[in-house]
Image (tube, rainbow, N blue to C red):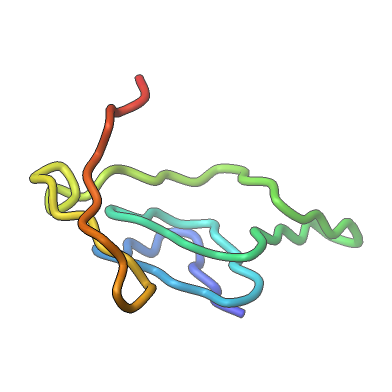
Amino acid sequence: MVKIKQGAIVKGLVYCGGYAYLNGKVEGSIYTDFFFEQRGPLSMENILIDVSITRSPYLLQGHPFSFFEGARDQKIISWLP
C-alpha cells in the first residue's frame, strides 16, 4: 500500500502494485491496481476525493515509457481535455 497524505506533493512517477491511498497531490503520473479511501467506518475502492493529479512536464515533452521489456516505441496519440 502507498499512502500519500493530505498536504503532501509527489513530483514524478508513483507505481503501486496494490492499494494507493491518495489524499494529496501528484505532479506526474500514478499507476496502481486500486485507489482506496477510508472515511470513518466506510471503506471505498477506486474513488478519488479531494486530490489533484497534474500532468508531468516530462510526459508533455513526449517521453513515454513502458514497464515491459522489449516494448516498442510508444507515442501520445492525443491528450484528453
